[in-house]
Image (tube, rainbow, N blue to C red; front, side, top):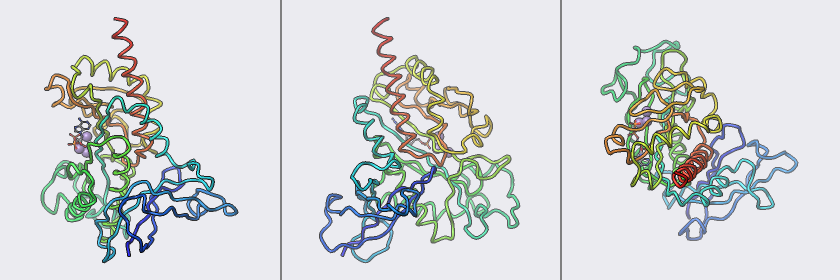
Length: 351
Ligand code: ADP
Ligand code: MN
Ligand code: MN
Ligand code: MN
């Protein structure tokens, strides 16, 4: 017997993960061996009750790093289709794939920094914060902090990172963030589709492992109002030319032209992001596109290491919120990066 955990995204505006288990007695060598399945779309905002079936079509398989079954066990990422086999309107992965086929020529790489806050499920307040909805010491010591008064549930963070690695996901690192019980992990580098799939699976594993600790991870962009940092999901990105050929002038030209698409991009970067992008707490204001070297108050940061290498490397888009849907946010970066690079190529042939 093999245990297959089918994982998909539901029909809410801010999509939630859903999953259910299936046991099969035939050999599973690759995702092609995982049968299509169905679910009740009327319970996930994906169908009406009188026409409720949706199809789960397996697209990728990960080793299941959680000890849920004594036999072999996999996580099976699925796309949702309508009964007639067409992609469901909530299937944003399909739209990203359509786009990537066109733009693969730029060989884009992505790395994502996922921030989140560990919420005590009973008190609905961050782990380790004083009871009665009181506040801990102000921010200042917690970022990359060491010791019980500065970092909570480090064991959960480490267990999650190890689980991701055991699922063959490219975890780059972890760190404690600016607010107590706010954490970050980074994944990548990967191509557009793989980074987006991997991000959803790392979130899935975080929910599952946190549950053993009575914790629910929160991805809201502004978990606590006031003088507390929000949670983002910076997307680092590069094209082959950026990595191998560009200089600072090209990066400035690129960033300046990206500004023309700021309005189109921001709507794909997560709900309630206006509460986070205030111009304070290491953010640029949501209405105020900017870029700069080593500038954590900008929309797009040119990392210092990239400037030091003469402009060769990658850029960090700091705007995406922790709750962004990577299928939408990464699609937007693919789309507008290729538009801008095309424009730059045109300009250089005219010149
Ligand atoms: P920060 O200084 O912003 O906190 P981190 O170290 O947390 O940076 O994250 C850096 C991210 O950049 C990682 O996810 C990494 O995979 C990604 N990255 C590194 N090089 C590239 C590249 N050439 N293209 C795209 N992403 C990259
Ligand atoms: Mn980081
Ligand atoms: Mn961070
Ligand atoms: Mn960052």
